[in-house]
Image (cartoon, rainbow, N blue to C red; front, side):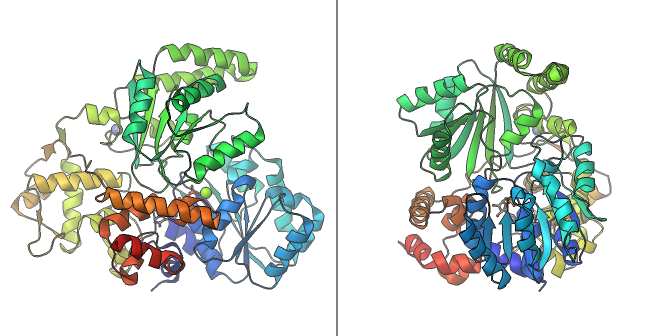
Amino acid sequence: MNKPLELLEKYFGYKYFREGQYEVISNILRGRDAFCIMPTGGGKSVCYQIPALILNGITLVISPLISLMKDQVDSIRDMGISAEFINSTQNLAEIKEILKRCYNGEVKILYIAPERLESEYFNKMLRKLWISQIAIDEAHCVSMWGHDFRKSYRAIAPFIKSLNIRPIVTAFTATATEEVRKDIYNLLELINPYTYIGSFDRENLEIAIHKEDDKLEFVKDIIREKEEEAGIIYCVTRKEVDGLYKYLKDRDYSVAKYHGGLKDEEKNYYQEEFLNDNKNVMIATNAFGMGIDKSNVRFIVHFTMPKNIESYYQEIGRGGRDGEKTECHLLYNRSDIRTLEYLIYTTVGNERKEIEIKKLQSMIDFCESDKCLRNFILNYFGEEKSRDYCNSCSNCLKNEELRDYTIEAQMILSCVYRSKEQYGISVLVDILRGFTGPKIIQNNLNKLSTYGIMRDYSSKFIRDLIKTLLELGYVNLKEGTYSMLKLNNKSIRVLKSQEKVICKLSNDVEEKIENRELFNKLRVWRKEKANSLRIKPYIIFSDSTLIELANRLPRNKEELLNIRGMGAKKLESYGEELLKIINS
Ligand code: ADP
Ligand code: MG
Ligand code: ZN
């Protein structure tokens, strides 16, 4: 089997690479620099962590988020990868101790804060290491055009130059307008990097806009409906945060808050309460969230419309990092526009006022639009989709109507034909979207002419359409198998353009968690375990892993290993306890 896939399964417990990951990894392994733009939650870390495990020597990861470095390192250690971090929270003795372990070859991945590179003394110590890869996370910080410029990122290129042997340099970011991209390329001095630019689309985020007058009722409803799940409510002003926090707290909701006016220790306290699953709902201004890795945020509410689409998309991007369905609700009220205009006029410098007002106008257009909301956003970021319909935003679901899906149906049916009627829905989706997974590689499915032809459709859309085609008899399930698709006469007529497919798409809204009681038990176990190990709950397992456990009820260690997110080390650490809970 091929090495990256083997490690993905062994350490991370995943069977498939996501879009782009395999390509980035294999290019790094060939010794080439890489520049990787993927949306938040797209899975950038794996792209440098797997090469780190394979390459000889150590990988340095430069990351700007000191407060989260410990969590990042905890999380890969919990998978059995030897990692350390160095930042300003440690004293010299501790740092020397860590470096000693690095010199002894006991550490595969070392996270460092960029500020460290400004110290010549520290650089000298680093130069004694055998560095095979330097991975620069949040690479947009090097650019003044980006939204969080960090001066110390400019120390990276000189440091690399000072090394005797130039390591492979890899850069990762989720935001990259044209200017920022150029800056990253030039200022980090990447050499002919393999460049991967992923789609901005986050298809597990369900986008909804509500023209709501009674916002408080809406918020209470959604928190109640989500029971114990985690969510973030974004407000525009500190005052709004304080008010909503008090209102909900007085009514016994499990809430935390965060804004720039709180003292550092308050901010830390509330953030930790939220990250540790002690408080379910975070009420915050946009000051909250940069780099937050909590993967199980299940809903995002914008209590007030944000001031531009960039902020909006970044904020909803903090939801559903584990790839599970996440609801994003924006409460739109025209009277909020005045507040935002006022904020812009009073807080933004003259030279930027006009730009900010324009951006606000796009945000208003978005809220007033009656077309696909997802496409609106993607177009805004310069991405064109061939279909003006996503089936998972409030406009698409509202405007549900008959549409012509003949072309898409032809792509799907021809893929069933080319792959010799040997596969079920999930593999077909992977082929059509051009994903890389063991089944794909082993069976040479990436050589098919239909490989990747639906690259710019979402997996959900393709799945929904296949299910609709099945329901309407445009294709059948093969008898005796429960999942392989098989063409019939109607399929052939569609393929020959003798028949059109005009229908409404079915929307897959079935409850994903079949055994909620067990799921809740597992969640309680995860929280207690995390407390005793002093790590964050989501570091132990993501929600998607718990959902699979609750749905598939594995009976032994072998079956446990088949669960997504269950690597060898996790099995060793938690396997027995999980089986006990599941069997009881
Ligand atoms: P990013 O840095 O791009 O925002 P992360 O690297 O933090 O994203 O990954 C987001 C989540 O996706 C993590 O929970 C990670 O474990 C998960 N993930 C990464 N790669 C895969 C994969 N191939 N299959 C399933 N989940 C994955
Ligand atoms: Mg990341
Ligand atoms: Zn839509």
